[in-house]
Length: 212
Image (cartoon, rainbow, N blue to C red; front, side, top):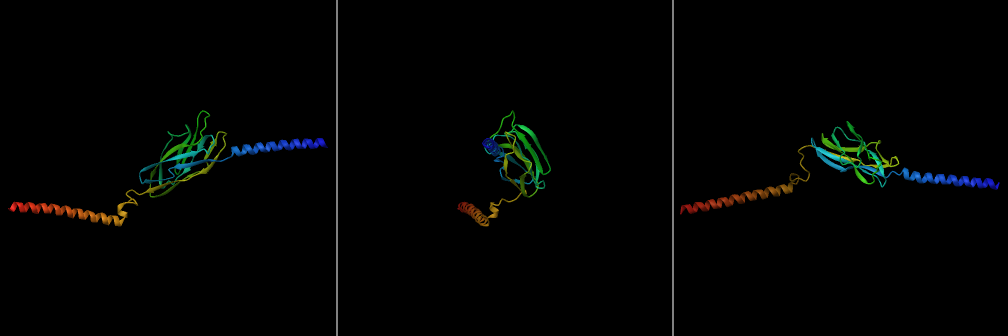
């Protein structure tokens, strides 16, 4: 009877040890602290002109080996132009493509290296098509791969591109401030009248001198 109790205690200790290891390892492997975002988070472009946004990754303190950063955009407001990965922290290109309304980005580090910190994935350029507010949204296929090949992506931030019509008067322009416009116009008229008066004075003076 004592022997059975001893065996049971050994089994219990062994199972407890296995469970503890699993808990510790799972906490490390599945911690999803990484994030994807756009820089700038919000920007503006004029219709027919281009704007470039940068896809950024924050590893969340973990060593990462790759990033998949697919995202959607409203194709009625924006036209895809190009992808530039010259300054990417991830030298290996797995995918850099697009279809109407979606951009596909997937990159990795080379030679078994890892990346830790905040860095650039790729830059994407769009052309403004029509007036409106465009939202860039990462898809559910996005992931950030740790050195252990686990997905540690936790946060996906959206981006905003506001498309304005060409020739739009800036909100802070002088023509949107009636008081400033009136004062400026009045001052201009006074300057013109003053200049005319000075010119006329010298003409009259010259005429008087000529009459003597």
